Length: 81
Image: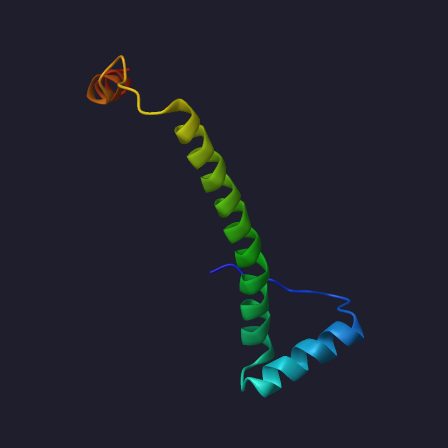
């Protein structure tokens, strides 16, 4: 499993992280992982929501279409390359 070492961590950030870890009865490393997951997860959720909204709008604008070539044929051709 990869690891991460942070040098020159600002004192105020360390104190905040340490306080949150203590309040949640976690180690500093556990709290840092949770904070990182929360920070990256919210961004990813917003990006997914935007992408899904764009896809929904595209589908609504295009309507239902029948593909000119059956998907099975395209997959088969790709596998045979």
